[in-house]
Image 1: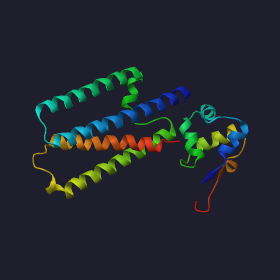
Image 2: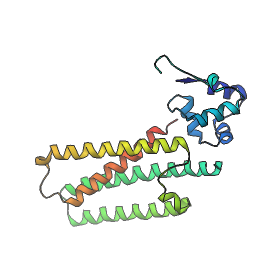
Image 3: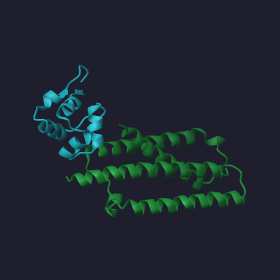
Image 4: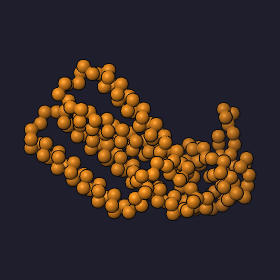
Length: 66
Length: 141
């Protein structure tokens, strides 16, 4: 599963730590989600989407293998 | 969940990684060293080294200032930290299993004078080291 979190974050001018602080997770969570090494729960996905005022579908994109 | 709790958990995880890797290396060195021939003076040096390590670790743990309950908790509040902690336990279990199989397979080549204490320290060292390395590897950026 790919995601556009890094793109949204950079567009908003927010650092990983600031995003982590905003949704109450660790910075490592954001870092590993962005690099697609960790798949977050629905709760975290919804929190990130809410933070960027967008939908979960626009943040996360399914691969052909998923 | 307070952000301060998450930051404390992150610090605790870093502290845990450093402690596990160093303790694992010390246990392995101790177990391997005890298998070789040595005299009483060398044993004193090893004993003093381990004692020094334990004192440094105790000071480090006290100065870290984490709440006492964190040392007895089995789950992290942060989702990612909890996941890598569970994965590290799985890796540790696998490593222990491989170690047991290795010892079972090479049973004849292990000298009979190797004590149970030596083997216990060896197993402990492997498990702690794998736990620490697994956490370190999984939490890389």
